[in-house]
Length: 69
Image 1 (cartoon, rainbow, N blue to C red):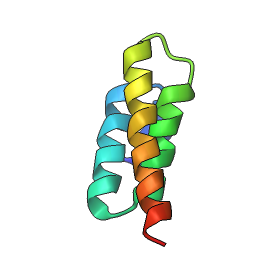
Image 2 (spheres, helix red, strand yellow):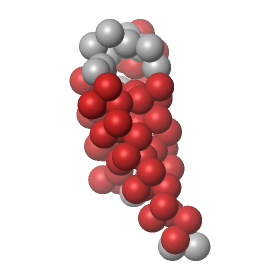
Image 3 (spheres, one colour):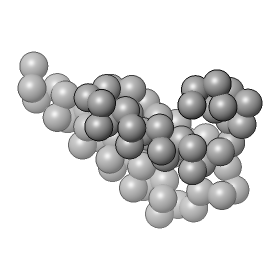
């Protein structure tokens, strides 16, 4: 999946699949980074509502990580 991402860095659906996969695997920090990338990367296919959702999800993940330490 990561090699495909390097070939198609603007593939939003693949990045969405990646963050969900990472979260299910327990790689929460990596999932949050992918979500942040989705929210902040210039891409005409991602509207403001999706960006807010990605940032919100990343924030929830990070807060859960820092709260569990």
